[in-house]
Amino acid sequence: MPVQCDFCSAPDPVACYRAKEFGITSSEQVFPDTPVYNIGGLDHVATDDIHPIRGFGTMAHPLWLACSQCSAFIDARNLDGLLEHCVTRSQREGMLPTNLPPQNIRHFYRDFFSAFFHYLQAREPYAK
Ligand SMILES: [Zn+2]
Image (cartoon, rainbow, N blue to C red):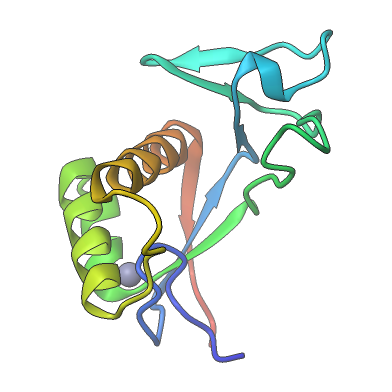
């Protein structure tokens, strides 16, 4: 499996970002005693407690690789630019699920990237 950008799936990432682990969820998707936090209207958990059946079941890995285009958007904290680039590229490459309306996909990307920016801690050197 060749290494690729975790945002837009382009080959040859050039940067690595460390973010606190998070999972995107809603209160129905976690165990009853799990705290659900909210960043700008987005429900999420910052623990490993996503419900195994109802939740998405995965936490984001703390290290994210980015290609040169995505890292430029990330360094500028440009959420809209990053979103536009990733959705456009994924559509062009035919990598988006065809059974979902485009606005749902855009919404999912926005939630995911909003959480990423919220939990972003540092840019680290990326050694190939
Ligand atoms: Zn990229």
